[in-house]
Image (tube, rainbow, N blue to C red; front, side, top):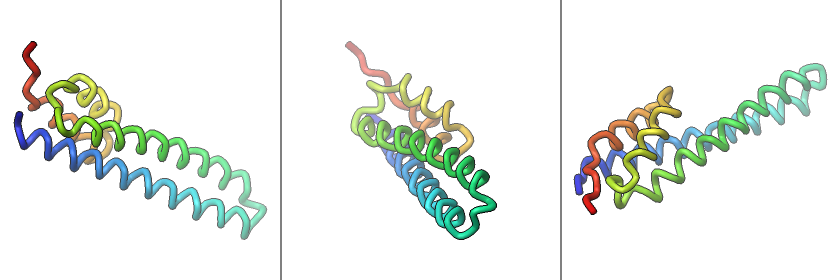
Length: 107
């Protein structure tokens, strides 16, 4: 098994988890902003909802690759799909590359 693919999947998963943590922090900031200024409550709720949705996706796109990092060849298609879905991030690009270069398991 290629160590390069394992490393790319590990780094991509960690970067996606960091993105999710950042989105949770932004939600906390928006929630605090909502408490300070009730006039901006609707904007804070909408933006907070977007940040929470992105955080849930980031957690999903971060945890799955970390579970698959030991054997990326068996999860090539899943890594490529996760990489395409999160292509706007560096972690997504690394997942895509890791899925492409992973050696496929032979039965």
